[in-house]
Amino acid sequence: MSVDARDARVFFVDPGRCIGCQSCVQACTECDTHRGRSMIQLDVLDRARSPQTAPVVCMHCESPTCAEVCPADAIKRTEDGVVQSARKPRCIACNNCVLACPFGVPKMASSLDLMMKCDLCYDRTSVGLKPMCASVCPSQALAYLTPDELARLRPAARPVNTFRFGAQAITTKVQVLVPRGAPVEVIDVTAAMHEPSLGHEVAAEVFDAVLEGADAPEGRS
Image 1: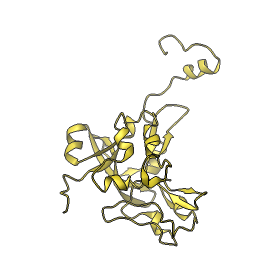
Image 2: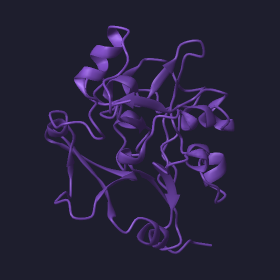
Image 3: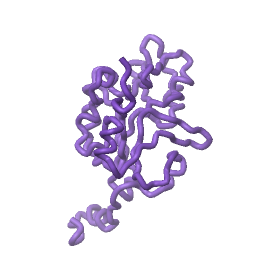
Image 4: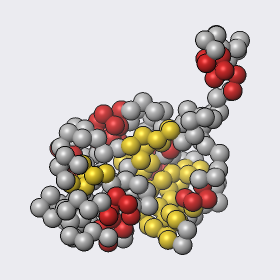
């Protein structure tokens, strides 16, 4: 039985909500398809200026570059758009996928000679359950919602799922939330590298006080 588009759940990433708690990283290890390994990477966006973090998950591209460069045809995309980890019998550990992914997601498990990455907890999402990370995220920076739920719970946000890397435009199954009023239809990842980081900046004098072993300036504790 096909699922109506308005009832289908979508994985949304809202970087501005991430609080760096690592709950998603820990929960990811509990997904059966990951063999006890975490497939989420938590990045600090600009360590010198801000504590803001952002989770990095597989974006599940409509035309996955990782699969396109795999010489062994080890990476498959399901009918519902989930790009899976490499199949062990086929993977030759060549690292082509690791080098080619514009989002920097695939990781080579050297001890297994196998590429592994987020597969959207396919054992769960294929039967209607949330991915492990979205089920534990306290700030809902990672959310698994229907379009109606998104409109009700995030009225000030809208999703974007097209990304540009130079001349390459990529459409993804996973969507990133941006402010509703932002004039963004395509996220230019290359240009965004030069923009200020999200979140509150940390005052330079706080760092100085910590380095000197002194108390933080009054009013900035």
